[in-house]
Length: 298
Image (tube, rainbow, N blue to C red; front, side):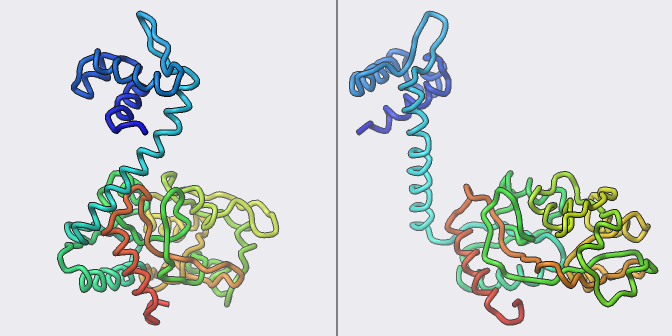
């Protein structure tokens, strides 16, 4: 078994490929770094690094060892972090956010249940926009986000809320008076697009490139926010598939919402960064799952 100091020394040198910088990072001498590496090489019976007066490079054996050790070390660190979280209990601060007015009531229900279970953990609630929802999770300013699925590259679930899809069209549009329409009508009208920062999977789900029968969907202009997208609809620049809760939370005299009778349901729930799965996050997701069982949010 390699000792922790041996693993740390090897992986640091594998990253830096420089004995001096490695020694500086580890706050030891270059001689100590060389001593540890030679000890590991004797143990495995092969060279880990090719050394010249100017360069240090990993050998194939060294590269394989580094590739094998990195995920193991990350797993051990995650296990230690989870154990530390468990020993402290659910305390500190949890930052949760919602994307879209329709998700706010569901979030608040989960927050209330979480607060009853974990009174020593302060919950900070905020709203994010389409333009910064992913960035807020990545930079750690938000721990959990209640948003629509799919949300690429993030841990998701459980589903807390489902809603039918409707098509936002300008008031007075030929489709505005229809009782319902098919998704196939998207091929006949430009579709307003979500911001570039929106995930690929989400855009493919909401504003597909083709209808179910394979007809191409013309792309309309891109909006910077949901309200801006609805304004583009009102201006006659395109149509936009949205959730039916838009009728309640975004009523506008210049926009009509027409049911899409053959579209799948929209699903919403908690989203978080996998690497930020702390004890607090897990406890909140459990509270969200329990809150979702309330018939009021089915």
